[in-house]
Length: 215
Image 1 (cartoon, one colour):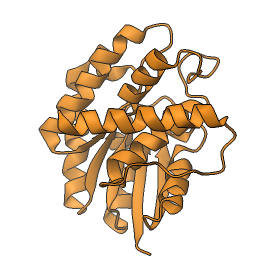
Image 2 (spheres, helix red, strand yellow):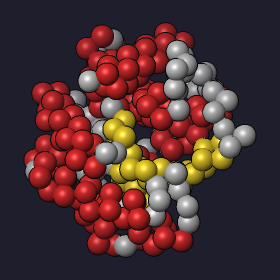
Image 3 (spheres, one colour):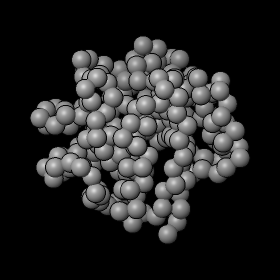
Image 4 (tube, helix red, strand yellow):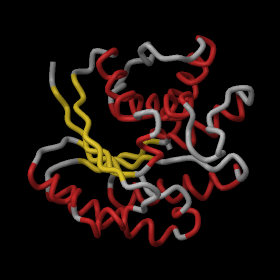
């Protein structure tokens, strides 16, 4: 099977519950090949910190990736969408030069401020339009799931980071956006969630990504 390589650049919203590993498991279970993931993470960091640090650019120059995933600091797109857009555009220039495709990991609003999701989603969608990047609408999938299934908890105790269900929903959104093609289902993996939760998370990811692709 083909091996696909992806570099994830972000912070604890990416590292929590090993999001790249969950995506890799889904890709393998779905028979889509082998996804090799690498991660560069700085706790609490915006993308500008990664740009200034330079490790990501050096990694891209020295190795080949099909995808480079960007996760902005969780509230920056809400507080300063212009700065977030600038960060993403500057990173996209390096990613294109390395021959890879930019993927934007849209995150979610904090539990105490669900109304922030609209601004957060808009910032990522506009950045995707400006750069031609693939936008993984995980935050919108969270919004849909929280509305349709309020009994399913996605936030961790801090009300910001994801619990396992939240990270799994984000991973399903990645799988649907990048690897699903015309398939109609998300494969099963060994994960410590109840069957009804898994079904709800699969539905939220599939319906959200399909709606986003049509828009």
